[in-house]
Structure formats: C-alpha cells, structure tokens
Length: 319
Image (cartoon, rainbow, N blue to C red):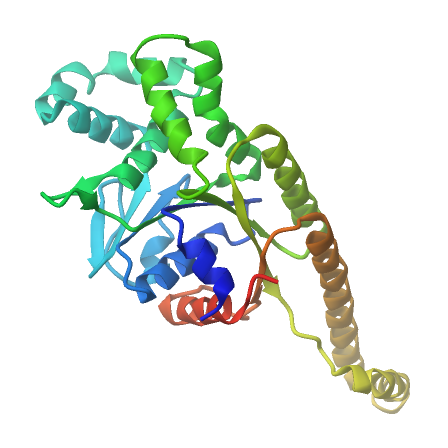
C-alpha cells in the first residue's frame, strides 16, 4: 500500500471536484472502495448526479436521496435540496411530522427557490452532518470516511464558500451558528481534504489549474491530491517510432488499404503527445500529491473496472 493513498484516506471527508466529464464520480467511487478495503465505514454522497452513478459503479442496490446500505460498511446517497431539507429538519427536531406540517408545502418550496444558495447550503449541511454524526452509546463516528462527489468546477467553488459567505454576512442567530460548525469542519486540515480531478487535455487542465489557484486564494480547505484521469499508454515503444515512420511511408505506396490504419496510428500519437504536454503542465502548476489513472477503453465502467482503478491508486505514491 502506498503512503500517498494512506495519507489521503486518513481524512474523514474527501471533497472531489473537477470539470464536468473528467470522471469525478469514478474517482469518488474508487476512493470509497479504497477506504472500504481498509476496513473503514464509508459513505459515498453524490451532488448534482441526476441519475446516480454509484449504482453502476458499485454494482449494489438502488441509490436515491435516502442513505442506503449497499454492503457491509458501505452506504451511499444521491442528495437533492428537498430531501436534504426534510432530513435536516427531522434531525434537528427529531419528528418527521414537524417537517410535514411546517416545511413540506408550496410556501417552503418557494422559499428554497427564492433564497440564493439555500439549495446548496442544505445539501452541504446534510453532507457535513454525516461527517460529525455519532452512532450508538459509544458516540463513535458513524462513518470513518465520507466521500463527497461534489459539483463541477464552475459550481464547486461557490458551493464550498457558502459557510464563509454566511459568516461574513450574518453576525448573530442560528444561521451563523450553523455556518460556524460547517466552516470549522471544512477548514480542519485533519478532517477535510480537497481532491482535484483533471483530464490531460487543454481545457480540463486549465480549469483544474484555475480551481487550484482559486481554492488556495479563496478557501481555507486543505488540498490533498490531484488525480489525472484517463491517461492513454504510448501507442508505440520509443524505440519503434523510427520504424513506424518508415512503415508509414512505404505502406501508403505498397498497400493503399493500410492508409486508414496509418492515419489512426498517427492520430493516437498526436493525442498521446497532447496528453504528455498537459500532464506535464498539471504537475508543474499544481504542486500536490498526484495520482494517475489509465484510460480503460470501455464504454461504461462497472465494479470490476473500478476495482482496477483502486489498485492503480494504491500502487501510485502521489508523486
């Protein structure tokens, strides 16, 4: 086991963010399984998932807004603001009828739509509640690790800034009290770490670098790791590049049918070259422990592929 992944999984809350389409859900699922393999009680929470990815990735049960136990020591939920409000009120007042009588009506729903950021605050508050949730008479944490599959890059920073925004604006009252404990958990370096996910492509790499800089400037949340996802292997060994160039020149003349293969091979070389450049830029600009995950070449990732990615995380050392 690598020291890199062990250091990351020592935290109670991992916040996974990155540009849409870079594989946040895949990385979140892999981190959850890595924690599970170490005997931790793990909760995987999805935000903005629409249709839960955890069902396919983990291959266990149906995931909805309520916490569901997928297997021994593994729970998941796909959070939305309305369910977060219901669960939050129930947790605070201990009685579901308080929510049903006072909050489950069109006026409450209109209030949620009218107050900027209230949806996000409820979802973030619900996630952080599970980080500090205690179980039974022992008062031990219910979950050893909470992995939050967070919003995409453009929404991620405002989402994580909400408690501080409230503290700046509200000086007294229950909302300030709620924001204080939330900000305390987010900024505790022993509890929370931010995990950035990027592809080795120009736009996702640029957004990851911008998020890294903005988070360092505007958030007080520790950044734990960068994950570079979907790296292609070199199409040819370095020693074969000269031979390939010779074959490419000859094949076009000798065998016209081979031209398609040559074009495809050249394209693979160009894509790999771009990935190498962007990989180097990410490592240069984001000075964090870095893990690299390969392109698996399958359309839909399921549990076996996720287990393979977990092994890649464990074999890397966050270089």
